[in-house]
Image (cartoon, rainbow, N blue to C red; front, side, top):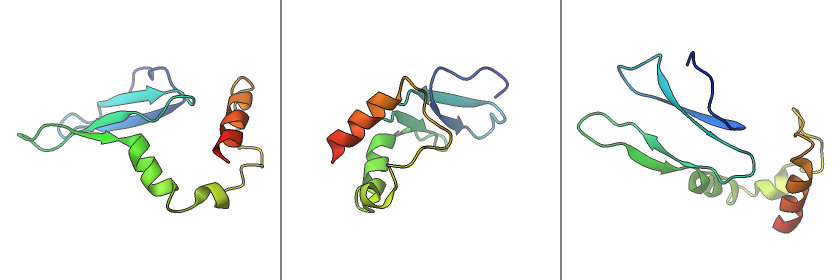
Length: 95
């Protein structure tokens, strides 16, 4: 974790037993779908792929967050100005 982060707006930190404090860092930009990451299991089992986008949808949609969250309010921290039009278009298309 002493090295620089990969490019991205959001990150997943994946630690493996016996290799801490070192970890794998997966980064992705705001405009990309959430990635599939590899979740380490104990040997001899292989890593388990975890589709973060599918997990997000499984939690978000049944809870009706699209109706409960105040998407008309400014974000804290704010978005980059270059991302604001994209977010507005995405929200308008989701309704």
